[in-house]
Image 1 (cartoon, rainbow, N blue to C red):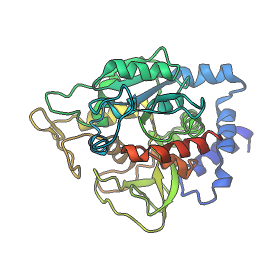
Image 2 (spheres, rainbow, N blue to C red; image 1 turned 120 degrees about the horizontal axis):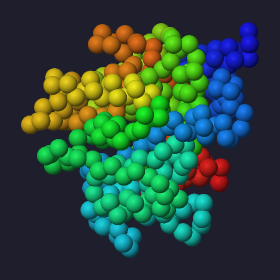
Image 3 (spheres, rainbow, N blue to C red; image 1 turned 180 degrees about the vertical axis):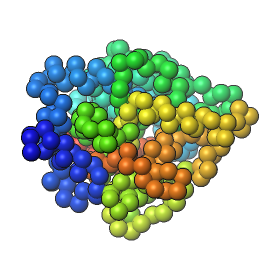
Image 4 (cartoon, rainbow, N blue to C red; image 1 turned 180 degrees about the horizontal axis):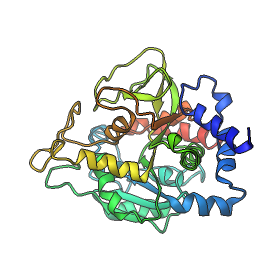
Length: 346
């Protein structure tokens, strides 16, 4: 077996069943094997063969109802008001003690230079532009999420649908993240390299998307796997079957990576008349609101209507439990910063 075929075998196995021995499927091993498959020798190769074909999309237009409720009765930092987006909330910059940065700058930093940057906003564009500058990203494309006549945005799946037309023909891969999740750049880079490597492999191995995961006992949003380790169900509250198991289950960490073509096809599926009505919004079975979530894209890519795996959507179990930290309310900020310190090795 050649080095390349051995690397393909390792990557395929590591993304097609439940990786109980995380040490055997480390980020280092996945990155090494992916570079071998792609023929990447140096950083210039990485930029030309992967990053130049990648779009990073940071979704910052959510309504944030839980966040707004958490601010009630709290003394707010100078310059911040309750009507501003959560991602603009000033927090400690753990890489520069004594300074503050907007919360969302952490998420943009995790994506810096991994591709062409797109940022979705819903209000306070000036604050969103400042977040990008604080993260040293000066070339971002800002996309306003239309509410389509409704009182609030119709979900992050709808936001991504509004980004797709802005992607150039050179884009093959799309990374999605959100403001307020404790992202790891190494987890994202590893997942991107694996996705790119699998696209280079035989047709039968090409995934439509990859979801970085970690193992969490009693996960709130567990991922159900079939007998071969392919994801077939998601426990997100907006989707069907939101069970909360007691044992350790894989759960996502707020980052998704897609094949651009497969992502566009799945979004088109949910914009069919049976799923969208201009008067009432999205009507997606199992969703509790009139929204379209990327979770719906994940579920559609993972399994058919009978719940049988398509074997084209993969999990990559290389994330750590710290990456599940998320700021849903102001009381979560301290835990988020503690998780970021561990992720960044500080």
